[in-house]
Image 1: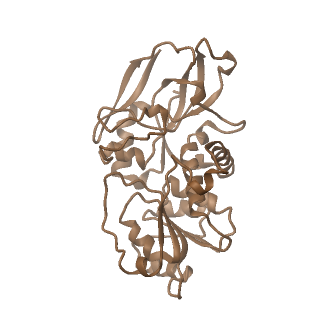
Image 2: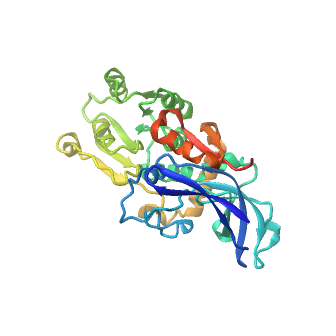
Image 3: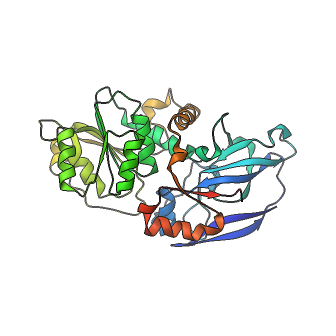
Length: 344
């Protein structure tokens, strides 16, 4: 079996290579990909060469093999496919089953059956592409720990921000607002569950938001701010909007990017907490009751409720990968979720 594989060959350059796959080992299965989704956050850091060289791509994903950033390399972690054949130790009743894998972009791949996640009945394979991002969104909300009547602000309305909106909309919050520079994404933010969405660069809109979260009142502001823009300078806006003893949850991965933070005024006086949230682990205070299986169960449930496939803006063959990454790099406002479609 010959597989078409996406390779990052150097910063700002990708190519599709053909690779002959061996026969499955006894515990492996051969999967034919149906769809895989590009991560406009983490994956674009790899594309742009903005990942620290000292850091593994993800030590918790077996498909990446604790891989370091060294070109050429494969990357990606949101693939849905169908099992086509199995090794001698695998029950052939699983042939034809549709599965999710944390797998780099490829038309076919080999995997131990134990590393694959079966799709629940009724889940569209295109919706299942969002499982990795939805799991992250669930973890972000767990780390944010919203309370009844909280005022919550979400910075960034890319896919992760939209999925977080959808989960938070299930809570009895006093307010849920979002910010994004793109007017199209602001409209999507409201569609996903925000009460209103604002342009962070428009001072008049910032003032309206400030009034809504009572920023001018003693100890006013947002109880929770989630920073999901991918731009570290947005942390200053998060501090500006956060209430006394409020909580800033940083879900962005900045890679090698840095920014100057203004921590001498509102942050210091208002006892603001800033916490990182990353999907590879569950917060220690929750891990006694929560494990990855429970988190996946909630993520599948939220995929069913939120129907994230509505956010797919582009479907492209893998052969157009170079165009796809240029689009996300140079004109990100024109793309929301880009999916490689292998069915053709």
